[in-house]
Amino acid sequence: MRLLTHNMLSSNIKGVSNGFPLRIEVEKVMEKQVDFNPDFLKNMFSKIEWKALVDAARTMGYVELPEEAESSMLDSDEFLRKFHHALLEVHLEEGALVCPETGRRFPVNKGIPNMLLHEDEASETKWNFQQTRHSNHSVSVRCIRISVWSKWGNSRAHSLVRNIFVSQRRKGIQGRTMASGQERAELDARAKQGETVVPGGTGGKSLEAQEHLAEGIVNGIKSQ
Image (tube, rainbow, N blue to C red; front, side, top):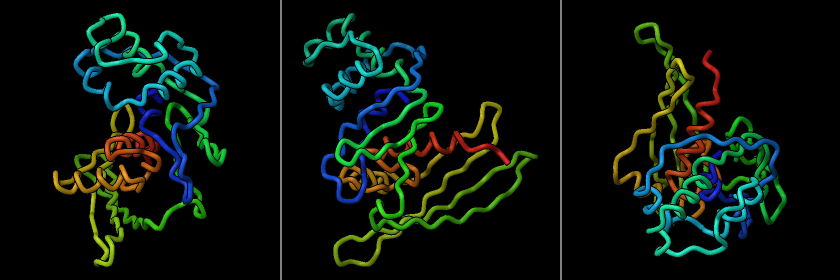
């Protein structure tokens, strides 16, 4: 789990008002080289909670980030490379994320945070899973059709169907989500309000963050 992912996560336990940032418990840290992309870093800077990133990096053993940062520092190659390393190359491979309010531990195994909630911790969001199997040129494909219901004021329940196709590949299982631009905008707005809009994406503070979490879970599924 990269610290970019950690910076997007919060505890979505029902009733929790102070779910960010999640405290990190470290068992194993790895460094994984990622291509340096200054434009990406400059775009991400305003989206990052800097203090949370600094504290997380120090917990993981990286202490080179400055205590405070401002946009003018983005002109410094030295700063950008330190930002890059902390955000993208320092990985929590094994450990846990801890809700700052309740102390609930979310395990991280093989770099994948498991943010799934117990039944008594979850909100009223309902998930309906319909699973089918088919074959295409001898490649097994699992099609998971997911229906999502949520309440919009006093109106009828809004239904959205999203598909995740999981195919067996040489390097594991890859997930792909499909939704229209309008649907994604609606989902992103709801995710930013704390709602889980992607199965397996609980804790993500945006649609993209929840998709990353869900993808991590899908990638961990063993082909049958």
